[in-house]
Amino acid sequence: MERIYQVVSEEDMARQKSFAAAVRELPHRPETYFIVTYGCQMNAHDSEKLAGILEEMGLIPAAKREEADFVIFNTCCVRDNAERRALGNITWLREVRKTRPELMIAVCGCMIQEPGMAEKILKQYRFINLAFGTANLHRFPEIMYEALESGRNTVKVDTQDVIPEGLPVQRLRKESAYLTIMYGCDNFCSYCIVPYVRGRERSREPSAVLREAEQLLKDGTKEIMLLGQNVNSYGKGLGNGITFAKLLKELDRMGVPRIRFMTSHPKDLSDELIDAMHDSKHILPQFHLPVQSGSDRILKKMNRHYTRDIYMERVRKLREAVPGIGLSTDIIVGFPGETEEDFRDTMNLVRDVGFDSAFTFIYSPRVGTLAASMEEQVAADISTRRIEELIALQEGIQQETLKRFLGQEEEVLVEGFSKRSDEAVSGKGRHAVSVTLNGEAADIGNIVKCRITALKHNTLMGERTAGVK
Ligand code: SAM
Ligand code: SF4
Image 1 (cartoon, rainbow, N blue to C red):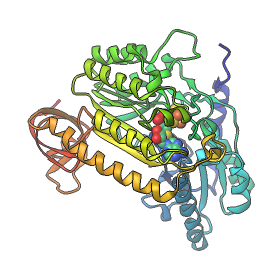
Image 2 (cartoon, helix red, strand yellow):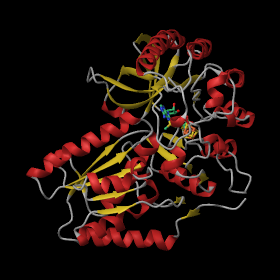
Image 3 (cartoon, protein in one colour):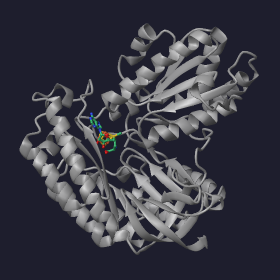
Image 4 (cartoon, rainbow, N blue to C red):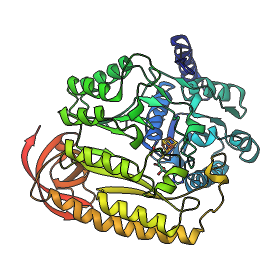
C-alpha cells in the first residue's frame, strides 16, 4: 500500500531545534508559559510536547495563566461546548492583556485545523499572536521565531499528514506516561470531526514505539498508556506485518509494569488482541470500548460497522479471556433520528453489559460531518432528558459492578495525596477504578498493595497490606 504520509525528516527536526535555540537567544522572548488544554488524552499528550518545546526555547512554567508571559490554548472541537469554552477563555485573556501588553497569546490544536477556522481567527480574534494546527506542532519553534521577529500575527495550518519523531516531552506525571502509537483516523463515524482535523490514520514504526517505551522504563515509568484514535488497527499500512496485538506482546516482554491503551473500536477488536490480553502479565484487566449506541439502526447511521450483537459478543469474549475485566464506554444520545425505542435499546445495552464507567455525551452537530446535514435532528430538551436518564441508570449500575472489589486485594499506582486527608493517598487500581488508601508521600509514584474495605460513590476505599513494590 502506498503511504500517504511521511515521517518528518531528521533535517527538518534539526532545523526546528535550531529555531528553538534561536528563540532562546532573543532578548524580547517571553520568560514564562502556561498551557490550557481541552479535550482528550491525545491533546493532553500534545500539551506535554508543547511544554517540552517551550522549555527548549528557554521558557519556564508559570503558576497561573494570568501571570504567564506566553499563554497557549491547545483546543478541542469534538463537541460545540469544548469549542465555546476555549473561545470564551481566549477572549477573557484579551482583558488581561489590556494591563499587560507584553502578554503573548497562542492557539493551537484541533479547532485551528477546522476548515475556515484559521481565517476566522485572523479576522475576529486579532489579539491572538500565533495560531497553528495539529499538523504544525513540530514546527512550533519556527512559528514562534517568526512571530517574535516580525512582531506580526502568525498563522500556520498545513493539511499534510506527518509523523514527527523525537519531539522533546515535558511529562506531567513521571509514573504514568502517554505514548502515541498512531495518529489520525480513517473511520469517518458520521458524527465525528476527528478524521477532518487529525488527518489520515498513520502508525508509528514499531521500532520507534519500542525505543520510546524502553526509555520510559529506564526513567522509572510504572505505567504506559498507549494512545491512538483506533489502536486496534495499529500497523495497517506499515507493510511489515505488525499488529496491535503483536506490539502489545513486545511491550509485555519488555517488562513495563502496567500497560493500558485507548481507544479501541469494536469493529477492529480481534481475537488475536483478546488472546494477547489473556496471555499477558502486564496489560491491565481494563478495556475502554466505545459503543456509542445500543440501536442497530443508529449504529448504521453512525457508520460504526458493528451491531449490538457483535458488540455483546466481543464483551463476552473479553470477559471469558480476562475474568473480572473492567469495561468502560462512550455513549452519544440524541443522534439524528434517534427515537425513544432506539434510546431504550441503548439503556438495555447498558444494563446488559454492566460497565464500570461510561462517558455520556449529547450529540453535537459538527460542520462538515455527514450527520450534521441529516434530517430529524433531535430537540435539545429530549436529548437532555435522555442523558439524565442514562446517567442515573449508569450510576446505579456502577454502584453494583464496583461491589465486586469489596474484600479483594488490589494494586494501586499512587498519584498523590487524597483531596480529603493528608494521611490518605489515591490512585488507580488495575481495573482503572480510583482507590483511596492510607499512605504517605513516599508512596506517590509507586504501586502499593491494599485490601478494598468500602465503596464511597465511585471510589474504592483500601487498607494497605504490603510495602512499596
Ligand atoms: N476514537 C475514539 C472512538 O472511536 O471512540 C474516540 C474519539 S472522540 C475524541 C471521543 C468520544 O467523543 C467518542 O467516542 C464519542 O462518543 C464522542 N463524540 C465524538 N463526536 C461527537 C459529537 N459530534 N457529538 C457528541 N459526542 C461526540
Ligand atoms: Fe471519531 Fe469514529 Fe475515528 Fe473515533 S473512530 S475518532 S469516533 S471517526
